[in-house]
Length: 192
Length: 177
Image 1 (cartoon, rainbow over the protein chains, first blue to last red):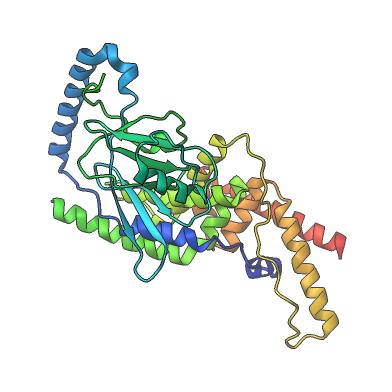
Image 2 (image 1 turned 90 degrees about the vertical axis):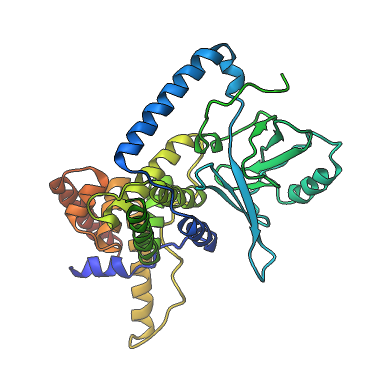
């Protein structure tokens, strides 16, 4: 290494915010995804392909509507001893999709889709204080309890998402988060 | 078999944690070189680790190089997705601390700091590929072979690019001091 190289190496590189450490730490501490043996994986893939093909044939006409369905589950937790809560939305494979800090300034705005849900409106007002832009509201497929998901490109907040329950998107604006969520074939909308 | 693979997954995560702890600044700066936006650079590092943790197969080859390559790809993807956004954060270095004299005289200390500031400016004005090569070589301590693996270029191309970048930096420093 010559003198100039040593000089360059001594320059202080820009540091990322501590928020990135939290995000990476959440990613690394998430459970390792379940694995399958090669033979089992092949057979599972064949089965999935067959099911997808059959589903495509049966519900083909409703394709556009089905694209509004995306499934995921979630959980939330509070960091002990702090006022910062972390919400993790997880896929059905339990891998993290979102990590969000409630007091993070990068939250998107939340839209008030269903004003009759007083409890949620309160939550929305609280979130709106740190809002920026865009939002998505989700409703439960089978019930009248509406659930809200505020999201930005990579940060998000989900309120009382329940494991094993599929949610339906009911408000259109949706950004790059869409790319993070698998778009499986779900049964037709029971309400329609 | 599943338990063994799961164990491998844990091992990989431990290695990823170690790589992040050691190279976080270099990884972040690499993403900054490409996105030129702090928030996107952080997202790129996050996305890369998310992808690495989700994958069920252990990456082949050197995991550290693989992580750098993953961050680089994630940054390129984000840059493409946010093409309309104007680059706002072009700085790659922290502000220099107040001049510390040490064993130098005040004049020497001031001169040293001026040279450092000029060097920072000169690096930031390099073309993205050269900037990337310089930072990966000097700050991450990677070999030309590793940089070539990360960027997908030939090793000789990386070496030439790096050498020319150093020449350019030397010339700029000579010219301004």
